[in-house]
Length: 368
Ligand SMILES: [Zn+2]
Image 1 (tube, protein in one colour):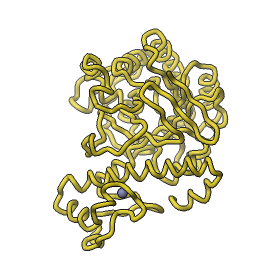
Image 2 (cartoon, rainbow, N blue to C red):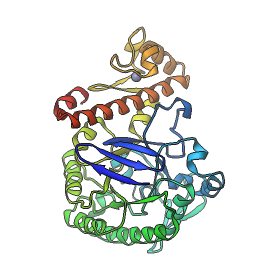
Image 3 (cartoon, rainbow, N blue to C red):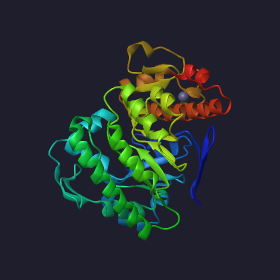
Image 4 (cartoon, rainbow, N blue to C red):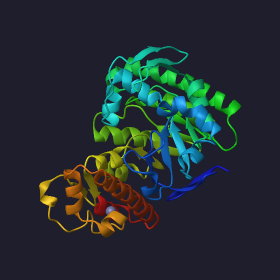
């Protein structure tokens, strides 16, 4: 039912259809693309939801037939384990390092070997996540891919903290996998995470564990450093040292130039970036991005992108979208989100073709 193979490009088979790789996975954190009604979402091959946000709804969703039926998404679904969100609340800066998000401080109450106690940022209720609890939620949701529970360490933690945290993550991943293997059905697989921050010896420790584990795939997570060079270096290092032909996902990276720089090393990316900037009035175009709030677009009859075949670019002008943003109509952001999603899908399709045809650098220049 599950299979993954990779030559110049790859193919991931799941019970909910196939995914051609490299690919971009859109974030439907709470079970929907924020700001866009589900029936306006362009065809996507895979989406990512979040254990952290779905925790208290998992049982009901299970009783309603699982997350695919509940949300109407009939594509493969992966859930992040919740570790990232919890530790973003505690450490702050991983989120801003990776995704530019901010959480209030002091919401993580206690980290023990057992798991993590925290205050829900949604309603302030005291909550608990552990490898077993996070895995149980993902099993109940019925996702195709559950992610092992880990600690996401920021770079400012320093070597000693990162080491302690990486070793705990490995123990937590092991517990996640054991619980998963005992309780999940054949229509689900688990993905492990390579932690270790910017320290190669810690990445090595984690890579050795992952290489000898029964995870179906692996996600590269944690701090990837402070600069692009450092980030590329860590990702390439992890990718080159992963064995066994596992599916490789890179967590939280979604800028066009980064995807082109790293796609030869990983099979999929996820990030809120394309949809979030759409909500804020920004369209992705070949070679950059444009801010539709800018007054210069008022009176411009051209589409967002003349080479785009999305329904927004086929029918609506920059002028109209500028106007919608100005008068604060939700159609404005939703058109931009739709376009940005279509843009990413088209880009990934052309990227895969360029890999097949050995024209990667040439095609890269058209997009970056
Ligand atoms: Zn478009």
